[in-house]
Picture 1: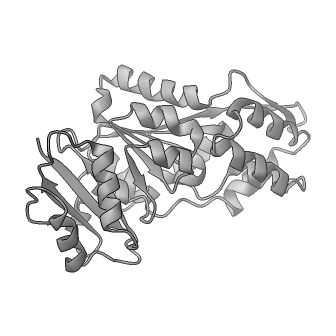
Picture 2: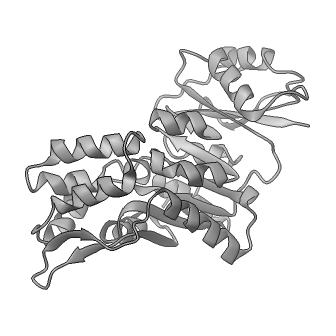
Amino acid sequence: MTYVATLICNPDTPALTDALIRRVRRSLYAAQDVQWLAPAVAADIIFAPGEDSDQRGLSDLLRTVIAGEPVDVVVQRPAHRRKALFVADMDSTIIGQECIDELADFVGLREHVAAITERAMRGEIAFEPALRERVALLKGLPTTVIDTVIADRITATPGARTLVATMRAHGTRTCLVSGGFTLFTQAVARMVGFDENRGNTLAVAPDSTLTGTVTEPILGREGKLATLLDLAGRLGISLERTMSAGDGANDLAMIAASGLGVAYHAKPALAAAAHARIDHADLTALLYAQGYRRDEFVEA
């Protein structure tokens, strides 16, 4: 049985050298010649591990081999490598911000709310009560502040638009799913180019201010998993042909169930559990992980 190891670095700081490739090839059994996906940025190496090898163990081995270099590695079987369904977390994954922390800044509670967000994303506290607690602190905030945050503070993660545009151009269904709020997911989905989006609903008073509550049931870890399973079932796509990406503990179930679950610049609990982890590269790494060459990318 063959595997493919994909080495990927940030395109802004190319770091893949012939010497590093040789070092990796020497550590792999029956390694074939390198197949470059982008010069100095991404490359595939096909190899045949021993029968007792496993994907995570091989990934750990190669991370040890390349230790000290700003290079990510994704190890997987070549079959069904290009995915038909992509489900992505929003905050700190597709965008560089945590939306609720930005809202809290307008009521002078950014540091307090950000600390709760961090603990929830690390899996130290339950997501649902943590969300209710943070939303309660936003009571009375005008909804116009959300428009201000979207316009002035929300930025797409490098590579996000290219990732989604390329996958859609090749027939992949894409969905943005968040434990955050639909008032943000709708705007970000349009900005980045997702087919659809799902999130939580903030309750709004008649005077267009936030009530400090969120509509139940809250979309958290299980809601993200349910989104993946619902879309795969509705579209007739096997889980093997799905990919998901996220950064926090509430992405764990979705990541585990996907054919390729990617921890993107993630908290330790998710990074340890995911099939693959991207610590250095931008989101185009998820294209290279699927075997796309740089000349196949679609720029949005």
